[in-house]
Image (tube, rainbow, N blue to C red; front, top):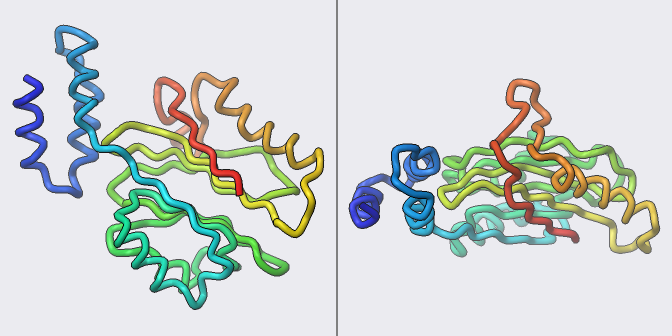
Length: 204
C-alpha cells in the first residue's frame, strides 16, 4: 500500500501536495500506526532559510530570486526596515506562489520581521506575550511533511542583551512547552492541531 500511495502522490500537482498529505495525516482505516508512519516518511523535508536583510527596499528582487533559487519552503527575514504591512518592497520580495506574514516597525530606524512561505501551506499567526526587548513573528505552518511552529526573533545587535530579553524570550517559548495545544491569535481558529507541533526557533 505504501508503494501505491507513492505512485498516487506523483500524480498530484505540486500546489495540491498539501491536500494530499493532509489526507494521509487523517488516515483512520489503516491496520497499524506503523503503516501511517511509513506513509508520512515519504513526505518531503521542509527547507527553511534566514536572512538579515538590513533593508529590503533595494533588495526585493534579490530576496525573491534567492528564495526561488534555493527552493526555500519558508524564509525568515529580519531587519526588513519596512513600516507598514502594505509595503511595496515587502510584497515584491515574495516570489510567485509565496505569501508573507510580517511585523513592521512603525517608528524608529531599522527593525522589522517577515516570514515568506509557500502559499499552498496552511499558515496561522500564533499569539505571543508582548515584548519590549525584541521584535518577532510567530506562525504555525502545516506543510506536506507535517506541522511546526516557527518563532523568528530580532534583537538589535547594537544593544547588549539584558535579563529582560531572556525573560521575555522564555515567556514566548513557554507557551509551546506548557500548553498541550498552540493557540492562534484568531478566535475563529483557536487551535491548530490536536497535539503540540514541533517548535523551530530562530533567535537573531
